[in-house]
View 1 (spheres, rainbow, N blue to C red):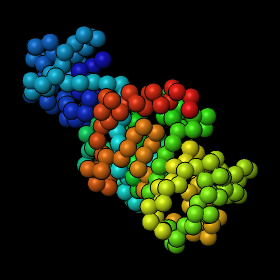
View 2: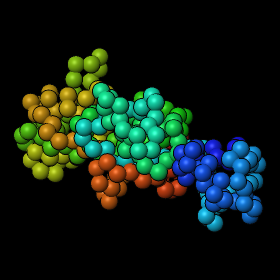
View 3: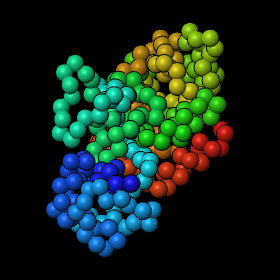
View 4: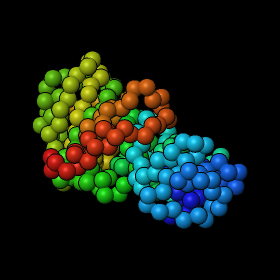
Length: 247
């Protein structure tokens, strides 16, 4: 791999930015300063930027606290650093990721435009596909505020499976009432507007919705809406175990 591509993929900067850094002799390979962006690295090359080792990984995994008003999509033509969103296009969740050199990031699954909370952003297509497979039944928990009180009888009906107009009822879910008009609801599907449609069968409107867990991941409460961070090694391992357990 070329040195400039390695640095860009590792999030040091854009290709043009890292070329300048290389020209300015800010980069070493195996202890020797290299000023050629096209320098070819071997599998054992140790690359340092300003004296610090540069960690490279083929895949990245980000936790985003999605804010309302942002669509759960990736952009066909990724924006360069500091570039404004083209007129007529909406802001996407991938636009909110800062500090990544990857141009192939995408959201693993979707949240409605007005729904907030935990969203996994990655470029690992195999992991995403397995996590989202209907056969895996990966649990997702949401905090929902409702237009009125949810009775115990209504909660029991929803937990057993609701007819939301699809070919089959929803799978059994779990509802924990927090207040009369606020609940935690855990589902193992991802149908279109599923939670909103479920509560509509009981005459209730979801007035606020935030996802707080996705499989083994829990939303980092230190992340403000729109903020993100890379997953820890332990979190990545937990996702790998989740997609492989055949739940």
